[in-house]
Image: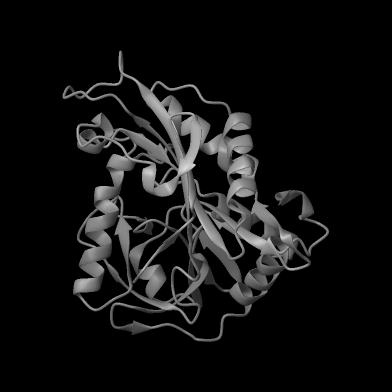
Length: 304
């Protein structure tokens, strides 16, 4: 599928044409996975075509700033945010986009280390619609396990860790599924290939707690707050594999996936009536369009 990249990128401290934003084949991070990144979504304001809406941008910027600390790189959330605002003003997008800010070891070096090595911050964007089908996805259990925090910095979104996500996603596709669920080393449910998990049992929303080697997703946090606002009980705890198979509802969340239902896990069909997820998703859709008073503070507007 052809991808449409935004015409202007940010690299080595300057804005330049995307096609000129190149790095050397000897770039350190290319060989050792020493980078930290985040997705950020932006959509046109339905009421003003010259304005883009950003969902919780400072939370995203703070997350990247904290992830960069694992690389020994100091970059302020304010700098990340202002770069993103200028990036939008220069590109003037007219469709929903995803932006990829990345901190990485930019030196030309062959030694795996984080000290005495140059780092850089880059940013590019791509037009992107639905990442997964809004009708729902089928899932399997992956043979690959989620990394453990004792051996990998899971509180950061580190590029090298996504080999497991790639293996998991491709395994699912090769088996005829859309997505896959990773278990952790305790045999509990952790997350999808790159998204958080929610399920409903007996009217209560359950999601793996942060001690289950999950990524502390911003969309996950948003769903929890929205659900609480709507009066639902949310329980964060370890989740067993079989709970997913008998759940009343299952869905996944992420910046790109947003809120996507699951209609089958392995050979088990799940209920197609999802009243709780639907209520949360409807509220979420209003929020991201700056059309919800309670959560209006989650949205920042960039005009050009």
